[in-house]
Image 1 (cartoon, rainbow, N blue to C red):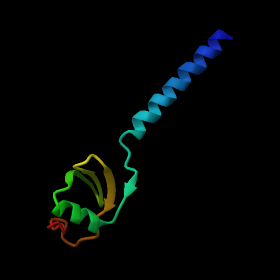
Image 2: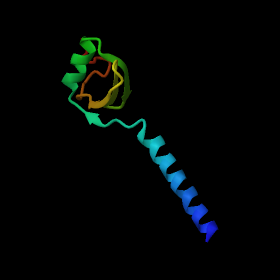
Image 3: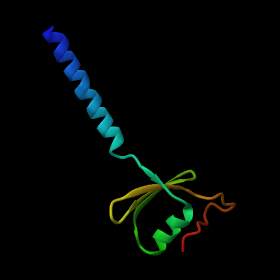
Image 4: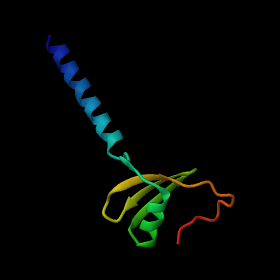
Length: 81
């Protein structure tokens, strides 16, 4: 009986830890590319990570969002002013 209780407690702790580690870096919000360009032009971006056509953005205030880059013929040209 005690072994089962200890086992369930260990399982619960492991699951909570795993959930927190995966959830801590998640991006909850998504927005349009125009908002991203606006934030860049106003100096509100701390970090932007580009992955194919998705951009994960961290603003200066610590908030995060994700946006999708529009299709471009020339990938070296980004519409960021």
